[in-house]
Figure 1 (cartoon, helix red, strand yellow):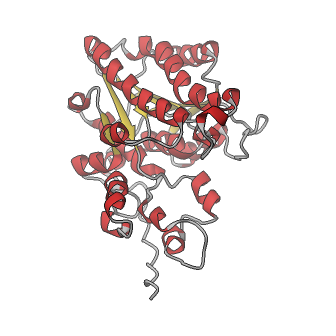
Figure 2 (figure 1 turned 90 degrees about the horizontal axis):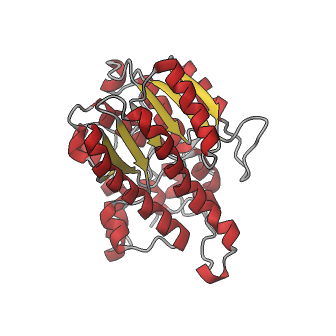
Length: 328
């Protein structure tokens, strides 16, 4: 018997989150590296909604389109922030080029004389060659993930931290994929993805130790199954219909497990909550997940839920019929 189709969840006003209405980050300056789309775009928008002046970087512009078929641009992110009533600047920047990062930091220093929040969100998952054994992959092609997902983070941190540490209380956030516990016990289906994402978490761990001397904090944060624009397009669904489509047995996609997915704004709200917390140093050197931070700080995703993706994924190992709706 087919299960009843869930009704679409009511989507409240995205500004319905206390730190936004209180503008708790007014006067703060943030840099979001990799803010063109998905998680980075949501993080940039949510930091701006909370009052921060956000510098957004990315490679993709209307003149330089995506090499994997995406239409989003870094100027588009700044335009959305302006439409939200926030303050932002867009910078075209390839974070594999330290000179370009230095130019952005020079602009930030000239304009503000400070940097309070740095978010390293550049990913590279679009370059994964799923299902191909490591020794059969094209090394130069697959190294794009490693370079985009890790080397950019090293370049950005090395260039930006002198300004971030100029004043006490700086916050450095690494966006990764997978909790420390999950990644310690599970192979991530690709040598390059596995190495890159575990290394990003380890980068936050190491930077936390070094930033301690500068009264600053480093944290890695992982989303669950991110319901980004690219993921919605991949499965041929929309933000209005994703839950219904996940349980529609007449469709080939999205899979049923997509019902555990979360919007990029759950990650954006996680970043805002950390940035607004005067006691955030308790998380220094750790890897946190969006569900745990949502519980700790008392916020929800846009539909009012708190998806617990990593607990659901683990539960599937013992019960393939586990219902994702019971983990929201």
